[in-house]
Every structure is written in C-alpha cells, then in structure tokens.
Image (cartoon, rainbow, N blue to C red; front, side):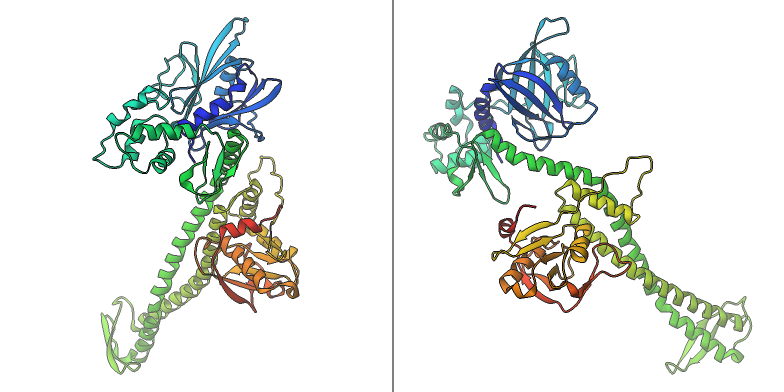
Length: 564
C-alpha cells in the first residue's frame, strides 16, 4: 500500500464535487472512524474519515457499517458544530498527509460559524480534530495532554501542526533546492530523497529510480518532475501480491498487470473494507483467544508436572524390593538399626537398605510396601491424566489454529458456543442469550467441477463429517497436524487422482502447515471416519486411509472458491 501525500493530492481532486455539499448526518462506527452523509450536486454521498492506527484514510464509501447505540462524546461535539454545515473547501497541507475540511454552519441562535475539520494521517498517531476558524481546538477524537507530548490536543488549546522536519514541497519551486539536500557520495539516494521531500513514499521513489536508472546532480530534479508529470494520469490500481500494493497511478517498476478501479474511492473502499471488518472480528475474538491461550499454557504445565510424577514413580520397584528383602532377612535385622546390609538375590550382590530407627524391622518393611503402592497408584493415575491432558493440548492447539483463520462473526460465535459447551467459559446469567450462529461450510470446486466442502472450526468440522457428508464421500485431513476437515461430495467412482490432489491441497492450506511444503494429507471414505464418544469437538478416528504429500498454493485455492 502507499497512501502517501501524492495519493492524497489526487484523491482531493476527486473529492472536489463535495465542495458546497451539505453534511446531513454524522455517525461514528468505532473509536477512530466516522461516516459523513453529504448531499452534493443532487446526489447522496458517504464520506468515510478515519484516524484508525492501521487503517487511517478518507474516501467515499458504499459499504454499510454498524454504529454504536450511544454516541461517543466526539460524535456529539461534531454533530453540534458541523452537522448541517456546508463544505466550503478541502485542502491538503503542502504535499503532506494532512487534510483540512473548511465548513460553514450555524449555531443555536442562527449565526454563521466557520469550522475546520482536520485529518492527520500519521499511523498510530493519526487524529481527527475540530477547530474554529482561528484554529482554536473544539475537540479531538484522540486527546493529547501536555504531559509527555510535544503538543496538546485538548478543547480550548490552540491547534499546532504535528512536529515534523521541514521538507520540500515537490509541487512548488522548492523542489529545485533538492540537490542541496543530497550527498551523492554517501549513497542510499532514495532514503535521502525520502527525508528531504514532503509526501513521498518509498514506492514512489522506486518509480522515480526506475525511470531514471541513475541519480546525478543534473538528473535528480528532472527525474522527480517527469515522474510527477506521468503520475498526473490518474488510474487507480491494485497489484495483488503477498502484501497487496495500491496506488493512484500505474507503476512501471512493478512489471505486472494490476487490477484497475474506476475511482480512487472505489479502490480504497475495496482495499480497506475487508481488512477493517476482519480487524473488528479479530478484536471481538481476542477475549476468547486469551482464554484458549491461558488453558493451553495451563495444560502444558500440567503435562510437565505429570511427566515428572511418572518419572519419579520409577523408584517404586526399588521400594518393593526393599520391603521384600527386609521381610526375607527379618531375622538378621535388629531393632534400632539405621540400615541393613543384606544379600540381593536379584543382582547377586550385597545391598544396603536405609531404615527408620523408630520403627521395627516389620514396620520398616510395611513402610516400603506402602511407598511402593503409593507410587504405583500415583503412576497409574498420572498416566490416565497425562493421556487426557495430551488430548486437551491437541484440542487447544486446534482451537489456536482456528482462531488464526477466523474471518466472520459467525465463526467467532461458533467458537464462543463451543467454549461454553465445553465448560471453558461460563454463560453469563442476566445477559440476553446470543442468537445461535449459522453453520455455513466453505465451498470449492475442483478443476473438473467436483464440489468440495471445508470446515474451518470444530463446529463446522463436526457438522460436515458427521451430518452433511455421506458414507461414499471422500474425507481429507492433514496427518497429525491441526487443520480443517475437507470432503469431496461425490461418490468414489466420480473422483480422479487430480481431484484428490486438489482436495488435499485445500486440507493442507487450511491447516497449521498452510505455509509448508510437502504436507502429508490422509484421505479415506466417510464410512471409515468415526467420532469417538466423549471426545472433544472436531476429534475423530479413521482407518483404511491413504496419504498424499502436497504443497499448499494460495492462488490455486482462490481459483477454486465458489460463492457460499
């Protein structure tokens, strides 16, 4: 991504039609993001403005958002001062990521007021601030107190721009001074340009470098000017990659075909919306994740303790032998002896046995028999507990993997339901019962057109394997690795090797080994898969399986997806 000063310059031109538009309604969907419903040129628009620490931006949106019932304080202030107002102008400050919306409105007695809505896009320091026409702060969506801050963002204080180094505005004659800021003998010219020029991103500097090939004192300024000139050809593009890159114009140095959009707002809406929604879902799931991590760590500690108990119980055989030898040589042992040296007929050697001087020889023998029985019982109990704890650990490993792949609120609710059913968290009495989630399986198709269903959590896996699938359907799961249940919903006679490899690829991709190579995947018919009575959700036994080794392919998985 590159939501830099150049992008904002192009975006403000796109939003010029909002000038003279009326702000009919303002809503706030989280602690840092707002929607302005604007009527302009006979049309309704939704302007999203966000100071989110990761997704700060502004653009028109067609998405629907949920809003809290109780309006936050900043929203109340915004409604009082700028709702019903007219946007007079939208200005970028220099070539920086600061935007000022100049708005005229009327106060309670009908007098005209002038307000400035300021958006500062600075990562985790992003902010939305409302001031009067003299830049006196009315309120900010994030407050900065005088203590430990370079400036103060609080009602009543004078607004000060963020403290930044003085940089050259590339859209003015200041750019001609750029060579004075560059040490051509020092190397890393791109970093020096980034430090000297306002609103440039590393992505844009790479484009300049690609167009120029070599920076010199003579070519530097013309190279920047030429690239800026080419960038006047606005073409919103998204370059799909491991980390998607978007920009307001095509980038020659990427040398790949981009996805194009009609407007910059459409591009930003597409790029940010799913990521923003996913971040909200992950935020809601975070409480459950902490519970699972806590239980996972507790179970690991329990396993270590049980393993220690079992190792210590190895002494039981020694205690049994001590009791037996004391009994056998009782006539040789005297009262108050501290030890007894006797012949060990198991090893054909003499052995020294410690004794308790306060006990009789017979009581000493009984003491060692009791120690033997105690350790024997502890070992048996620990072995049973260890087996259960190891199953629990596998279960929590499965849940942790499933938490990493959550993409919908229904999946969050299914995890919550499962934690309640398993007694890991308690259902809080007095709170309204949440609506039961719908189990929707994820649908795919092989190249040959066969349908595949995938479960992404234990509830989906159980439903798919024990209820949805039929006996002659083919079932897949990664071998000894937490992952999804995958089923080709066709009889064995219709399935070919190509289908098996593609279904196995899905099982590998939706597993903890999703980024690995040569992942082992077992497959067998559903009739050979059985849920064990009393087992944790998602756990099954299976037999008559075969194993294939596949390498997950994200692009292949995307191509196999069908609409749910």
